Image (tube, rainbow, N blue to C red; front, side, top):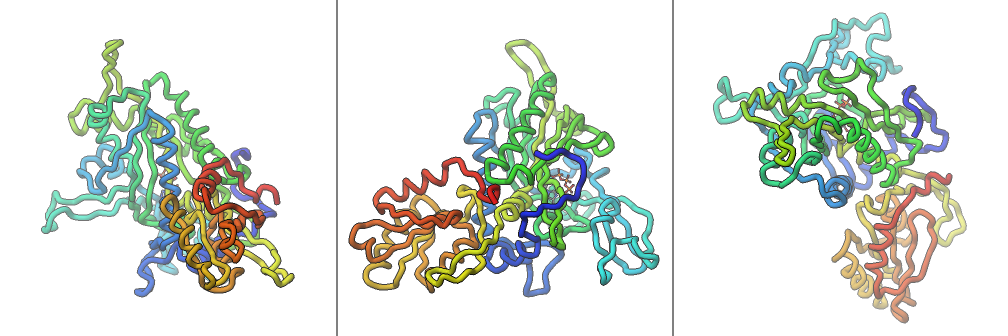
Length: 476
Ligand code: ATP
């Protein structure tokens, strides 16, 4: 980890820019601008086939770390529409605001605390307020919650909000979970789902959008254990990203300064990733992937007060009654997906298949667990029994993992396509395969080729997918 502090840093090795990621995502069907045929709608995106698979894998790995690899966390899936009092109790109705300024000259609106990072649309690009012609208003608070109406008549009292975070759906279910899950503090409740924020200045592709997915977990602990569990979750969450391949020198933990802390939090640290700057040309920007907060007893106390329900824990053994404190790791599924894409993106000069000439290949060096497609089966020629054997292998693989069969076009082109979607293992069927039932495995990262028997191949691929993995980008 690098030390917290500065926000700009240069990374000599990186070939990646946000523009290249956006282009790759469009070209290979990961992410498209939403409502594109109608000219698009501000900063919303649709995930295509490989984007769905990749984001599902990110969420799957989060669930694995929260549920499968532990026995002190349970899952929940709460409603997006909740009682309006939830947002009064949580403080969102009064205080979930960002400071907004208008420019009287160009008519655009900006987030007042982000002016230095924003462009105001002039050519050449300028920050809002940078030129003499800019005429910015005083900042005023803008509530980020989307309002809607429950029921067919837009009458008073029926106003509801699209949830701006998943966390409150966990707090309001504390009592239910305590009763039915046979858990006692320390224990956690985890949730993955959509949240909505009417961001003033969304942007940077899927980094900040108005509709996004969160992966949040509230960990309820005896008050005296809060500091220890806070440290535990900082370490755990940092480990999760690096174990899934994020380069350690592109990830850091940054503790919030006292003036950044929410009023209820006694400590918050962000997991930050060094994203490429939008313009490219080297350099990067440390940006939040996940916030980990020590929230004390604020949430349960407030909901107890507003709902009239007792939200506490009674320890029958000790006779002790207390309101648990909460440690919250709150991550974004879309931001994490973007970070994994950026960190995996690589370009290298390779020899064009059989020609002796050099060509650039673009490759996503994704952790095999995250790769949208784990294995591709490619018959070398579309005849002589090769497609039939390739289909047989494809069927054996796809009963256990996401696998593709691709018989179209030159083999080099098919490899390039799999490289660009990050498929770690390509299997080529050739004439020898029909004689001895072996295939050639081409490794995405090293390009090494290896001859393996078809029998037991699916198990072998599974073994390789789950083995510890380190990005080869470290070695460049
Ligand atoms: P930011 O400072 O970037 O606005 P935040 O501190 O308000 O984020 P939290 O409320 O802590 O964010 O939400 C937890 C996580 O949810 C963030 O770390 C991020 O990964 C994700 N997230 C929040 N807002 C957005 C958004 N508009 N688009 C995509 N992801 C988001």
